[in-house]
Every structure is written in structure tokens, then in C-alpha cells.
Amino acid sequence: MFFSKDRHKMRQFFFDIWQKQLNGTTPLEPMEQIIAGIIEQHPEYHALLADPEAVIDKDFTPEMGQSNPFLHMSMHIAIQEQLATQRPKGIIDIYQALIKKCNDPHAAEHQMMEPLGDMLMQAQRRNTAPDEKHYLKGLRKLLKK
Image (cartoon, rainbow, N blue to C red; front, side):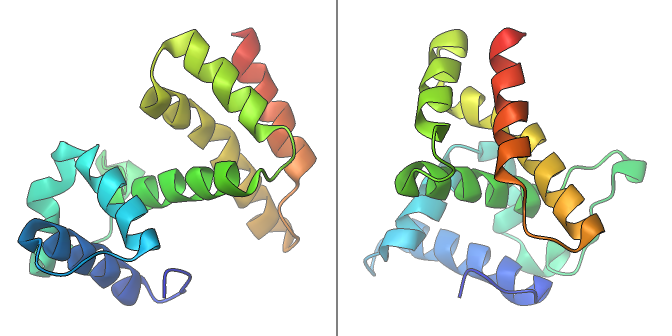
């Protein structure tokens, strides 16, 4: 279910998982546990997730000074999946070096989001598969800053 092009369904998935986590009556599936953990790390999104009707169809645009909380959480998910599958090769070493640099795994993931977003935007523009070498290059630049 997580991989869908339907924005409404994707957002509903986040709402459902958060409600399930809050209720605590039904065990979470492994992917749901990952997503609930990411939501827990973002208390600034808790009120938003408690009011699905207000945001399920909302556009979050940089022009309006808004970041998209669903995109943000999805990027955390993507990074955690990359780490779990060790793909691209070398990502774990870079991640661990970033953790040492900023003393915080969550902050390390936030730093990784810019190169990840860049890779995904280039792939979308070019209508090609994401370029993992370009992504790794961008991640390595973070270590030099």
C-alpha cells in the first residue's frame, strides 16, 4: 500500500497508522511501525495528523512558505529503507559518519534529504531511474561541510 501515486490514499495511510498507534488496540505491521516511529519523531505534525479532513487534499507549496509534511516523512521512510537494504552500497558508512558529525541519527537523515530529493527530481525530469552514483556523491559532500 505504501507505494502509490494516489496522494489521497497515501495521506490516508499516514492518518490510519497514526490513529492505530494512538489507539494501541491493534498491533502495527512492520512498515507501520517504521512510519509510526517517524511520526513520533515529528511532534509538529501530530495536530495535522489528528485532523485528516483539514489536510488530506491540501497543497503544501514552498511559495506559500510551507513544507510538505507527508513528503518529509516519506523521505525519512525512503532513507530508512535504503539503510535496511544497504542500497545504494556505501550508504550505511555515510550515514554513520553523518551521525558522528551531528550526534543525532534524526538530524543525519534530515541532512540526507537534500541529496535524496535532488536525485529524485533529476530522475523525474529526465524520466530515468534515480542515479545512485549522483546521490552518493551528494551525500559524500555533506561529510566535507
